[in-house]
Image 1: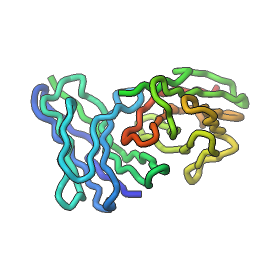
Image 2: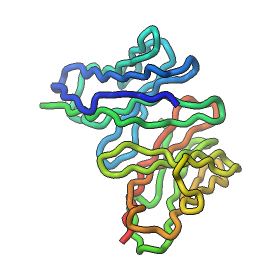
Image 3: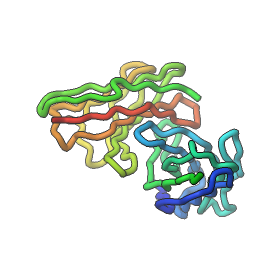
Image 4: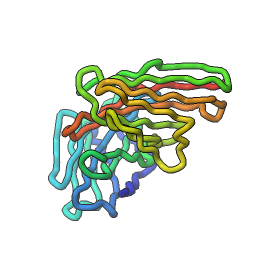
Length: 112
Length: 115
């Protein structure tokens, strides 16, 4: 299973973009990168995922480097409600056996 | 997104008893369900993966006789913690994925306290 490495914590000013990095240097060619976040004492919430192209949805953008060894999650205009632990996950396995292994995550604090 | 519901959200049980946690997918058929455990200030640890109608696959170090998982239907999986002890107190979270889907959706978690 590919391992992910994230900084343990980050601060971001409200209204500014939050850029959360993730290293996954051992990722293999068919493994997707997923991002989830967990607000205190709740289940994780899906944010976005990608394979090799950059992706954008209503919540965030995902930038994956060309060699796929790292990625960045971008919250374009962070709000106080975005304060959470953000997990970068490499989905392991193949069709029918996928599993989602969580790393230590980044605790993002959005400051007023 | 799809909805996954866990019940109960909180449970307190006496040491030595068993407790069952339910995980339901409300608006999709969950071909695969995952069970996680999370201790305070730690990340989620995958305990097991179950496919509907099959035996669960447990991660290394997880006792399958202690954590019984049943996934008998496409909308329901249960985790039973047998002979619970205080060290089993934790936040248990389920996740479900529909066959062919690229996303897994998580329940709101169950906080188990064994006294």
